[in-house]
Image 1 (cartoon, rainbow over the protein chains, first blue to last red):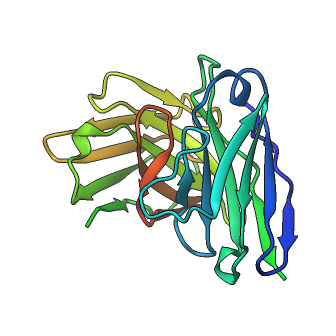
Image 2: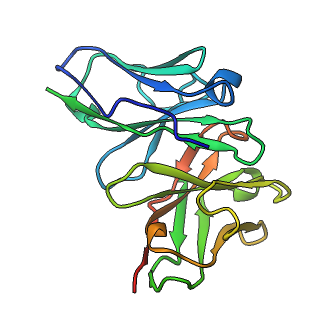
Amino acid sequence: QSALTQPASVSGSLGQSITISCTGSNTDIGDNDFVSWYQQHAGKAPKLLTYDVSNRPSGVSDRFSGSKSGNTASLTISGLQAEDEADYYCSSYTTITTAFYVFGTGTKVTVL
Amino acid sequence: QIHLVESGGRVVQPGTSLKLSCAASGLTLSTYAVHWVRQAPGKGLEWVAIISYDGRSYYYGDSLRGRVDISRDNSQNTVSLQMISLRPEDTGIYYCATDTQWGSGCLNWGRGTLLTVSS
């Protein structure tokens, strides 16, 4: 099971909106709605931002929103803040019977 | 306050075996599916394994399949990851995390335990 494909880096200015893409296939993102996004600051454990494509856990800012179209999922961060500078990972359940779950390659977000 | 605590990581030689554990406080682990996720130094997240809340279903990622066994003891509120024939490329931080459902997403994470495989 190959990792989902994300851009290596995305940057934006304070207050701007950015979107991170996550490309999979018809055996993962394209085949179910169990797509999630994580934020990881350096030296810290990942934090769940969205799950089931667009749901946010309690306490996660509504500046983070998830969506999906076909085999591609997206995370949009609106009103970019300095503390949003981190690594972001997508993930998906996969219908390949020998696998189960797969992460994306990761995207470094830089706030200019 | 929900806490997951991983333990068991240490420096081991290639070819050896090791068991990692995940203990929970502040939540009843027996009601959650639990993932193991690892991260090599400077690299991205890699999914390792999942076990259902009752231990009846489990799956493994490609890199450790055949060398790993996930299990749980709901009476002790713990989940374990037994690994054999360890390789240098197994080096990294190993996290346990609870799922929101079954493959839906990893909600609660521990801080991780560091495994180093080196001669």
